[in-house]
Length: 356
Image 1 (spheres, rainbow, N blue to C red):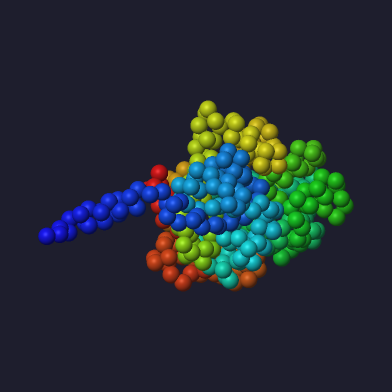
Image 2: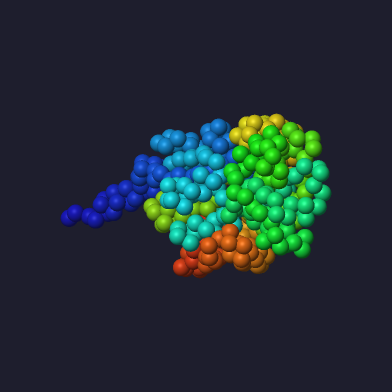
């Protein structure tokens, strides 16, 4: 009489083997792209590539990618082209401020998976020292990237000073070009709103220039983040891609926090961030405050403050026509906040932590 046990034992052994089989053998890694530009908490991904934590080239995997079985393709560009790339669905994710994510989310539902930093002086209005009062700029062009964080920072500071943005002219200009024109003292560029590294570069090269106001007056309104398209998250491997990005970010932050690797990591970050030296980078990370741990990020994303701040930022962007219309913003998972344009979702940070 034949017994069923041998077959059961065989099936059990097969199941155990499958469980213990590396994911990479079970399925080919899904490929996802991240567009990033030079900025302290975004240059982290360039450093992670240099450290071989991830391999930014398509078809090559670093240890974090192997762990999550995803292929992260890094696409480095200037900030404005990154925004364009993301809006045109030419990348899965982008390093972007949450306020700059409002516009593309109107046509491409998007998710903030991790906040990376907040501007604390990293965005600034720079003028010659002969200009000491904002009223001196009435009617004169102030150059910076229009419909972006620069125009927002300028207009919000005007509001805080009791001024009307309509009395001022914000002229669209790439921040890099604006910084160069200001350094060269071109006659038509006498006031610029730029972010680091341009702020530090301009101040170091023009002794007669100073900051008239900056982002310290609007704490937590400019939040830097990684934003992923909902459609990309919905693809096979999308959740793992989000977790791999988050783990990569915190892996470099751990190196910055560790006294044994801090200086070397800041130098590496400076190499990716306009070739700034260690002293400059120490100043940079003061003006750009990293959400360097999962706890800090989760505290921000789950706080009552984030909802009121996001609503305030959205309303101001619509009022100032920085954003065409108000996107619907939600908080939590897709199930908790369905049918929104932009969602702030802390669940991916938690998932990444669970698999440490």
